[in-house]
Image 1 (cartoon, rainbow, N blue to C red):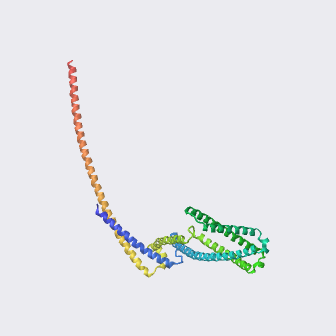
Image 2 (image 1 turned 45 degrees about the vertical axis):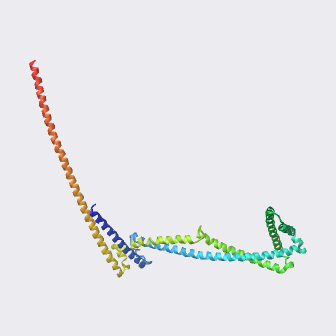
Image 3 (image 1 turned 135 degrees about the vertical axis):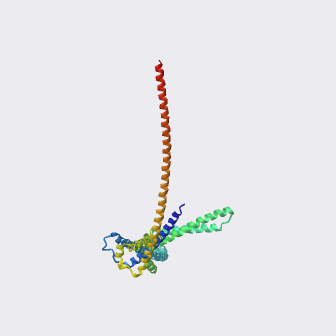
Length: 373
């Protein structure tokens, strides 16, 4: 393998390394220049749109990052508000449950009083019938449970008794709940009738207070849940801001990755006469270090490129010389072929001459034989 090609690869690697170093210089300078430019418009009067596009691209990236940051802040605030709302809803639901339980007890008490007072028999109506029916059923099941509890027998009798016991207890629970609902309905009916104060003024007042508190609690809870639902919808399908925040953070990271290219474009302008003139007011004495390093790297790169061109030229010369030698050999080969062909032609001409002499001899022979006749 030609060692010169290995040398070229080494030189090209050095050029790549120097180019990367030079680009980093341009990136650092470009970033510093953007900070110095701020909100100014250094390319406003420049007819070349490419210069203005660099600044426009930089500010677009800045705006996208700021927009994403604001969205993250808003999502974080919404997340905090969402947690507060959940706590408030849990507290309010507990409060509502307690009020409803207290109101239930008051209604049941009022209902019992109503259904037991003969003066309110007309108001009680069908509820009184339902009460009596349920009390009868409750008594029946209690008696049945008591009998089953006292019953004795073998394993099979025990299994059957337990099944019957479970059924009776289920029915007993059902009838008691139904009875509480009847009392509750009677209590509500008494409250709505406006006649309850004659039966139990204090209980009616408490029922009115608890009913108002329950309505207020229900309304407050509806508002809190509506606020929570609205915030939850803004979070997306997963119901939390985490995924959207992660997505925005990834977007910010992606945009940050695009800044070096914009810094490089602006920093590279100072390597051009026009660009350097446009940015001259933003250049400082401290930037001279950049220019010195830049010129040094450019000179090194130019030397390496010159060396590569020389080596490539030498390789090309050797290739051309090799081609000349190949061509000379081809010419010699062709000449040898020509010489051999000429020798063959001479041999063929000699053969023709000999054949022609034999023809003449044969013709003479023919003439001589004809004369004898």
